[in-house]
Length: 312
Image (cartoon, rainbow, N blue to C red; front, side, top):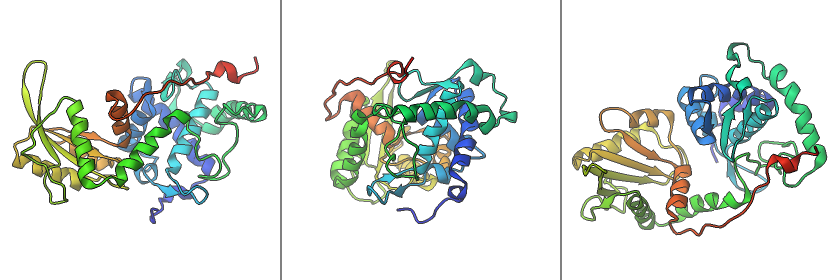
């Protein structure tokens, strides 16, 4: 559990949501009007002047379930639902947020979350609570940061719990097995692994993998691989260290993999110079495992659309 609690946690719960709402619209405008939650959160980390990065990445442990969670996720999801119910955004499919015409024409300088959003969204929340539909994962108000509703996620469903299980499994793997997994993952991405270079199973500053990738134009590039299992976010010094290891092997391209996430400074550091480093965080690991079906078995399920969640 993190001991350093962000000052933003002292801001009242609803006020945190109110501050997030215009920032979601601003980020969507910057991202072309439609984006995933992951893309919006990344944009917030890089550009927001009102939502602190330390709060976005802050993780705590629920006293009720013992599970780790990010308080920011709950405020973000409720902020998005408020915007949706007030007509500023739509959710065309799970995990994707899209600005409506109303959202696109919003004047953020005069934006007032209480007057412009909550007066429209609260009646919808109340109607949904009264229906008590089990399939509506927003049927109850959360009583605290991680109480009985800590599983509320507008972009999540029971079938997606495998993502959390996967990350936890990776965290408890032996270092050797984890680095083996990472090399296998990048191999699926098209990297031809060089087993003679960079195979290090201890934290000695070496690379965790090295290989070559050939483009459609038959241009071959040397690729360095680094893998870290951290509870907190990876910071810029780790990126700088990795770039130094790349230099030793004349790597033209780098892939840094972590089960956690990357700080704003780390993202910025990865883009410095002529050799941009590709950052793969925990969410992206899950996306890639699903894409390549790496030691997972796909299953089919169905999610009810809003048609079934309204009386008329």
